[in-house]
Length: 225
Image 1 (cartoon, one colour):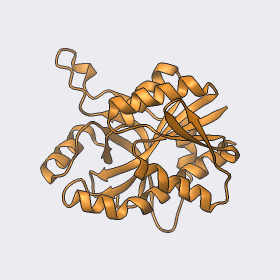
Image 2 (image 1 turned 90 degrees about the vertical axis):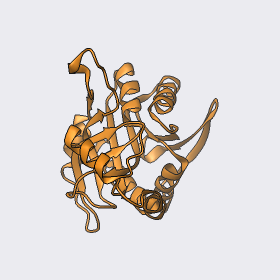
Image 3 (image 1 turned 120 degrees about the vertical axis):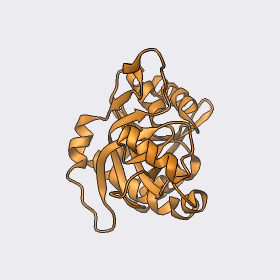
Image 4 (image 1 turned 30 degrees about the vertical axis):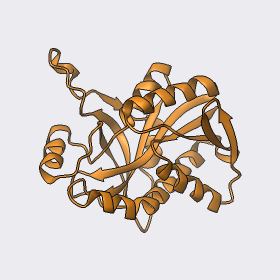
């Protein structure tokens, strides 16, 4: 059985694939109808772009799970913004839970901010990781279709969710995985502080952040080969 890694954007997936190329891992390029997919046999890993936003990401992730057939788990891998002072730019967060912060049900209060528990097997392995140049954190990731770019909104979101970082698409991938009844894990590398100069920080830090993300994913999958 294989792992499906889905990144929202080409700019996020390309550094991941470049990292695997630097490790001399063979990459096979295949076409699944309208989507380009890279396959790394040594890791039993499919890599593809899921698209921007929870809905598009969920649609393409579900399509890939259905089409590839032998996918046994899904990883959403991308960038994120920090919501608290305990995580820094270039650190990687492995989601114990993906919390959908913009799912605002008004009638059933228990439905507010539904959360999706991360793949427990991979979370257990992530606890063991150490790297000299960045930290690996386990905690909540807030997921919603909203750019968080100012301190007031970031602080409010942290208060509401207790999430370490915020990103867009994770809940879409989590819902697709739940529908297909397979484990899901969100892994995000920090590019910015979700408060000021986000666009420039994102562009400047994306490549290195995703390189760090790829390191964590490689070692997660090495443990389960």
